[in-house]
Length: 599
Image 1 (cartoon, rainbow, N blue to C red):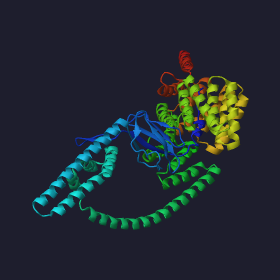
Image 2: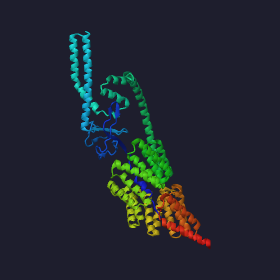
Image 3: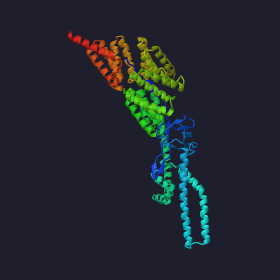
Image 4: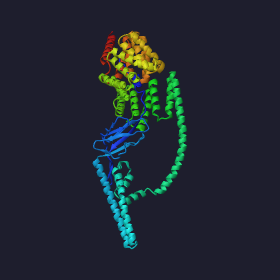
């Protein structure tokens, strides 16, 4: 008899926050060589230290890095790479604001940077020398043509040479500018213009700029457009402020309706108002997540919850990118939905994506990473990989305790997972101890008549059922049944699982009519919510088959048992739970049916 985690998985990610991620690159300069762009190279292995945060190691070949931000501004302590220096020495001292555009830190070796500066200075000096010669020749020509007097000739040359002496600052400034210029960050047109200026092709640069039209006329036109736009913006801003206030008020009203109906356990109506709120702004990650979460937990409409999570994932990637906590949270939620639907492979794929993002962004000791350890451990539990399950659960518990201390709901969820695992390993004292710890944390917060407490009572009942203390098991099942029915409704899969276990007790006590009554109710719920090919559904079908076997209806028993085994084979392959026992019973039924035919 195989048991599955249910609510414990959901509650592990209920406390996540919405954060933004800033992306950046550490790279060398892009250069122009013979008129062609040679892009800069990413500096893998550089370290970026954001003020107040753990330094980020650049581990991508293109030099990309990212880090979470929660404030409206941030700065850097340092950007380091052995053998390299920042081109812009003031880059770290600036105050930055969160942006969807990446931050670029351009670095070069000191030798290369010095060489670039000398090369730029040499080009500029040569260009200025060429200009000096051209102007000297023009003055000489004027004198030869007797268009200027000797005195005017001397004054013209004197001024020319004085101007030349004052060009030293210009040479220094331009050399600095072009030795630091990252051509990667210019578009094609301005690359050409800057390249012409750098190489002294000033007429060509002027000609290129003139292809854009009369700059003074265009500036005047744009000023007029700007004034018109500012007026429109003023009107739009006023309209947006009214719209935002209206949306905010409507969202608050929807949420109040939701809380009101939730308090009455009218979950369908409560979900309606959360969905209504989400429809107000389909880019609001929190509203999408809340709608999906409630529909998943209280309505068990996994297809609809999945739609909200997938919409949230798309928005999160658009707004914050792939390497972001919000994105990780939606991957986790999607993975859990696939777990409930019995698609463990897709569940593991999405949960692993969440794990990799969180570990990359936050490091190992983070509540989100702890959540991933627990959820991935549950997938391994269902694959029957007990050692891996224990490893992941223990890591999740250790991190959660380090982050929150002992008395936190995430720690309680870890205890529930370990309790289920201990029950599977027949370490019943350990299982009961874990459930007791979890209940002491959760019951004061959520109350005895809550799905959180109900689920712990349900799992505790399973332990007593395994201990063959059927009276106590039934007591716990009934407490769980009442708590979950009143809060989740009678058509929730958790209620379906409780019905199944109550049916087990009646079957053990050979009250087969009662057993069949509860099994039938369980199957109706689980087939509707989870589908006909889910392991929960197979589990109940197998239970019904065993009742028919015990009551001598071998034909129906064989049909049900074979159907249940086929569903499990489609999910687990040849590693179905209690495979030998199930095949032996099927063979026994076939033998009894053959004996009946002989009679």
